[in-house]
Amino acid sequence: GENVEQHPSTLSVQEGDSAVIKCTYSDSASNYFPWYKQELGKGPQLIIDIRSNVGEKKDQRIAVTLNKTAKHFSLHITETQPEDSAVYFCAGGDFGNEKLTFGTGTRLTIIP
Amino acid sequence: DGGITQSPKYLFRKEGQNVTLSCEQNLNHDAMYWYRQDPGQGLRLIYYSQIVNDFQKGDIAEGYSVSREKKESFPLTVTSAQKNPTAFYLCATYDLSGGPDTQYFGPGTRLTVL
Image (cartoon, rainbow over all chains, first blue to last red; front, side):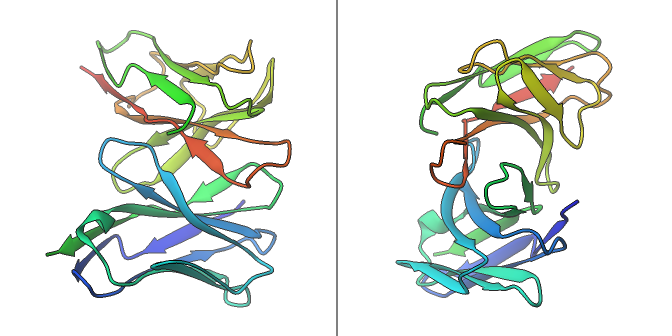
């Protein structure tokens, strides 16, 4: 089955700087990679996703890059703000298959 | 959290008691899931269901049971056989009819077994 590894487990960034979180996956059949943001005591919320036929996707301050050959994908947050502080999860799955495998999460703290 | 309701938000039970967590959705999604979240371990899949009256075990199904009698509801029972039930439980749904390719999560239930 799929195995998704996520690094780092914690990340502290000065407000205004960029943050990068990286994930690797094992199953070459995986072709859908979402990123979720989870605030304290709440369920995860999708913030951006990418399919394997695309190398990069951007939505305002958030971007995701995918390297299929190396089987890794990354989340980039630019111009970080205090409200970006949360736990971020990556996941991998087969497009059209409803099962996702999640990474272990990254706790991002933005330092004012 | 959209149209997914999990109740209660906090639940306390004595060791050895079965407890049922509720998950209701009004998104008309076919697939529903239960995940367990522990610190530093991400989300682990307990059970999932693609259609009424059918469900499959996930990666950590031992000590849990589910039912899917209605499309809108997917309750999870944590039995006394679950050795370490204290955790944050998340319910999710997925649209199999061609909607966005992602799972939508409820707000979660934090279960504490005393």
